[in-house]
Every structure is written in C-alpha cells, then in structure tokens.
Image (cartoon, rainbow, N blue to C red; front, side, top):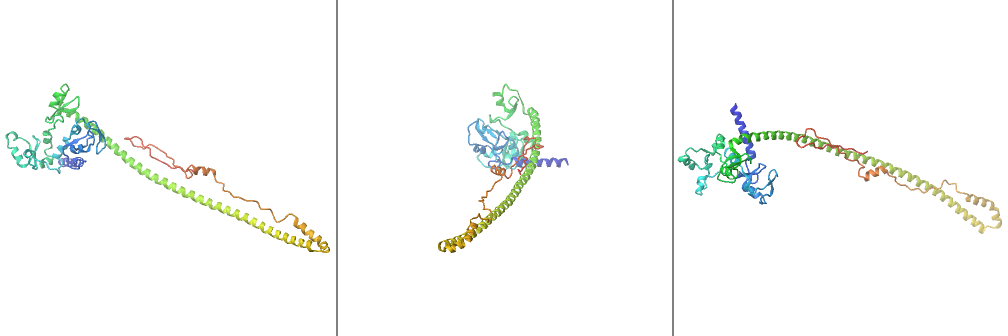
Length: 395
C-alpha cells in the first residue's frame, strides 16, 4: 500500500511538472538552452534574445508571462542563469518532442538520434556509440542508461548525483563551492580569482542551510496562497452580491421613474381638465352676455329708427300725441342695462412647483444614488475593500 501511495504521489508530481515546465511559452516548443529570469519563469535563450527589443545592458523589459519588470544583465541574455532543473526534467520526467542527437556522432558531423545518455560524461549517445562507450577502458564503469530508463524515474537520484552544472562565467569549470558572503555557487576559478578572501563551503554543506530556509519560506507562501484563495472566494461572493444589489437598484430606479411618470400624467390630466372647465365656463358667460347685448342693441336700433322717422315725417299733432310714449321708451332704453355683470378679462397661467423645478434642474428630481461603504470581513491579503452601495430616493 505504501508503494502504491508513493507511486501515486510521484505521478501527481509528474503531472504538475508536465503542466508547468513542458514548453517555452514564447515558441511553444520544448525548451532549448533553458534560461531562467529572476521571476523564475523560463524560456529558450534564443527566444528570450529575440523577445527583448533593447539589448542595452541595464535596459528594462517585461517578463512575457507575469509582466514583472526585469533588468537586462551587463552580459545581456547570457547573464541570466541557465535552468539546469529543466535539463534534469527533460531527462527524467518530460518526454521532449525535440529528439536528442548523439554527441559522439556530431563530432563527425553526423545527425543521429540519441537513445541513451552517459551520466558521467553528460553525453547523449546513439545505440552503437552507447555500446562502444562502455567497452572503452576509460569509460567501462560509466553509468549509461537508455532515455526510457531515465524517463521512468528509477535513476533520478543517480542522475542528480552525476549532474554537472557549469559556471556561467568560466564555461568549462563545474560548480564546486558556495560563497557564504555572496550567497552564490561558484567554480574553482571563481574561488581563486574573485572569492579568495571570502568564506566558502561545499555544496552539500550549503544545501543543509539553504534548503530548510527556502522550505520555510515556501511554507509561508503556501499559507499566503491559501489566504489569497479564501480572499478570492470571499470577493467572488461580494461581487455576486453587488451584482444583485446593482440589479435591485436599477429596478428601483425604473419603478420609481414609472411611478413619477404616472403621477405626472395624472396631474397633467387634472390640470388640463381644470383649464378646460374654466375656459368653457368663461366663454359661455361671455357668449350669453353678447347675446343679451345683441338683443338690446337691436331693440335700441329699431326704436331709434322709429323715433327718427316720427320726428322727421310726423306732423305736429302726431308727434305730440306720441311724445309721452316715445319719451318713456327712450327714457327706458337710456337706463343702465340690467343684463347681468359685465364679463371680466380672464387669462390663465401655469404656476409650477418651485421645489420640484429646482430638483429637476439639479438632476435630482427622480432621486440620487447614495453610496454606503463598509469593510469586507475576512479579507486579509489586500486590506479592506469597500464595495457595498445603497440607493436612496428623494421623494
């Protein structure tokens, strides 16, 4: 059962490695001369060189993946570290699509696919060269394994023991020491030439201190990741609630707008009816007065014509006989008219609600959005975020 558990964990690790370390994210192919940036993202050296537009030492470029600002070393792309970890993965976990070439055949400029690797020489070999390699006296005890054996993981420890990492400055010298002052691995030439007065130690001794320190930092990072994921979950809930709140407020605005429109329309109908009633009553009053005046005027005209005719054509006797009756009639017509009150001039004007006009002119006639902010509980990684909003309508 224990063996099966270890196997499952190993396969899970392999799956994670394949997911994150398989291809260069620039060319999308297997890594070739993998070069790692300070942000720990790795690219083919050739891809990185073509990606960086300004090759001036000290210039700044952005990592293609995380967009972290990165300073170009004084040696350009060559100044970045070679990722030997990716090299190791390609030999043990990954199955490269780019085939390895036999190093021995390459000396004779022959392009032959490699099927094995000598761990002592760190050289890829084709099948004939692998057989010949272990026959030579100088290399008879070398560890030569097929690529399939290396990919199985059963020789992982041996591969790490024989792995040779060369100094980036002195290309032919392998890394042998660790400078405690500079905190970097160095080769023999580095130790003699530039770190002679520095205290150095072996790689095995240095790893006893460095690895636990990094493991401790990694543990803290894992805890921070857990907290960050909890924060994201909380914020997703906050965002979901805020979406619901936003939809609710928008509905409130539309409902309140329709309500005000209905109220305004009802007021409009009421005012129009009032104007219509007042107008009709006033016009009727004037019409009745005009009809009465027309009758009175007509009577006065006919009487005037008659009296004029009597005075101009009647004889003395005729005029004297009618004078009393004519005088009474004229006296009656000369009296003030009793046909009712004289109509007044009427003008109508709309008197608006000044308070409402002011609110409308300010753009707040419908209401205004009031924001209420409060701290989101449970957010630690980025501090308090204020997102809660509430709408208040001004009635």
